[in-house]
Length: 117
Image 1 (cartoon, rainbow, N blue to C red):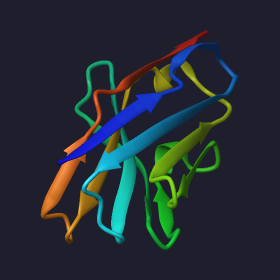
Image 2: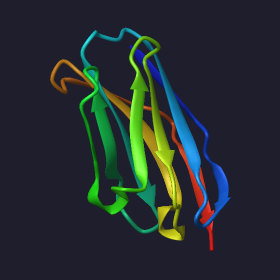
Image 3: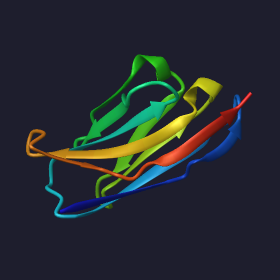
């Protein structure tokens, strides 16, 4: 079993920054993919960014240029640096870990991000 704990959410004004963290523990294989998703108001959960154990990552178009994903593979932690935040970024942000080619998938409980205008 794998546990994911997100932190770093909060209230910020438009144009501000936040850094989300996700700590993974448990039965984690050496190769895995960690990602961030979000669920904003009125929308289904959507992909934000992903990064694998080798450090290869990609960012969703809506946040490209504003958000950056990174990880500390030794600690099984993943981070999401969010800059130039907009009210439309408000929502719950979830960490996900996949391993064995997606056969196993785990989610965190989420952390709330609120961006005021």
